[in-house]
Length: 365
Image (tube, rainbow, N blue to C red):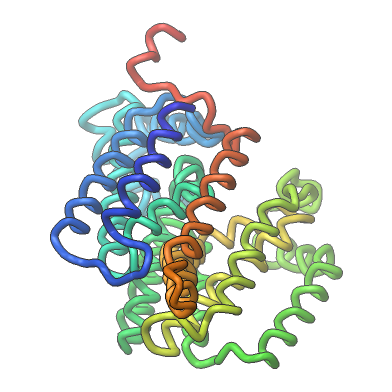
């Protein structure tokens, strides 16, 4: 677990002081930090061996590419946007270890660019990315996480008024994971304000969806995702309630502090909707684990943009007291992130412990 703690300590002790808590710092140092963060995360992900529950699954897919021609992709379960570059790489190297550096390059450098462009504090964003388990998710649900990064860019294009780029970018994300189609109607996020009425309606609908989740999911598995049956383990079983609580706290904090968020109202509403969507799908995931996968599509704006805004808002609240409490107020956020990060590691979130490198493979075969 040491490598994970080093990452978290670096984000909190180096990234946050360098990039600031109040969302005001910018410049070359922040850019260098984002480049370094992308390089380190890419290396940790690329060099791992059998880390994460899905590692061996993806290794098996890569091995099977030895027996698949380019013309056979269209009928496969895995999306062509993901498998095509792997097939090209497979023609150069049959070793499945080659797949993970390529996958890592498709996730972390684009994510770092997004954080640099859109986040108020790259240091807080990276700490949140680690502390709320997004890094561990990216080591497992790799196809969907690539799609999630692309969808984060799509939301940014929507904020800039480019609906065409939004739709085209989401369709590109679908090439990596079909679930990205759920993001298309989310363009409406820009036009539905978060008010008390919206909050009440959303709360009531969430309770109703949780209460009738069996019937709703039965309809989905019968007519949309027919590959999943009601007896499927991911459909029939749920996740621990802790994940829903984590994102519920994020949404409540964002809602209470929304008037202090930077940027215009559309950006604030988008962040709030992404926070709510993350919480909603994790909530339904209490009963049906498969549903929580949809939350991944909204995690990046919710966490990498929402948490820095919350931190900056708390900083501002402390400064308003005229007693120099700004940093103390804002320090609550990285402390909570560190605690969450530690708890996730203790339960071995998505099988990321122990961390082993590919250089240890020969000793374990």
